[in-house]
Length: 184
Image 1 (tube, rainbow, N blue to C red):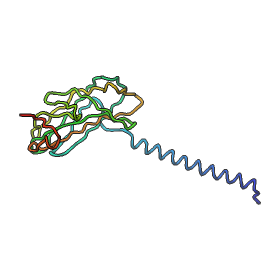
Image 2: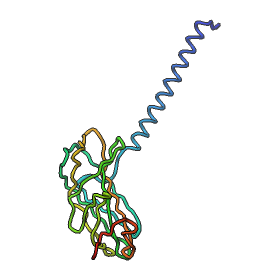
Image 3: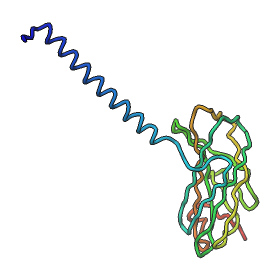
Image 4: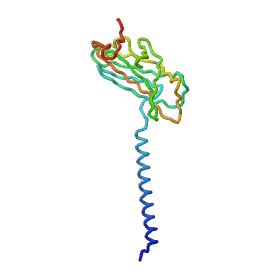
């Protein structure tokens, strides 16, 4: 069979379109796979108790999903606590924010339990006692949605709480710029 210029052109277009279709299907499937694998998913969700274990001079973060839609200033039940698993008392501080699927962050207000205070200057929550060895304390029982953030049900959000610690014998003022014990 002899191939003329017209048939060769059609054959070239068919082969090109087949290859282009195969490449687009491949990238479409792999893009979907990687998008779904890097999705904002944690094993904790709103309302479940969240606890971080921490040792001296370390940081530990806990994350939980925030699903649904919430109005600004909504007060949502959420117990967040920290457990000192070291063999010495610790200074503890925490920072809390909401991460969105659009890679933006917003600070999150907490309804604090006693012995915790918020410092506007650095955005941290400070435990104003030494957390004794092998003991725990609850940071909050409720989270409060930011007044300038509308949580949409079709978007994914994660609440991030990062706890930091210093051994109780260290000078928190030098390292953190603030001593949560004050003059105690």
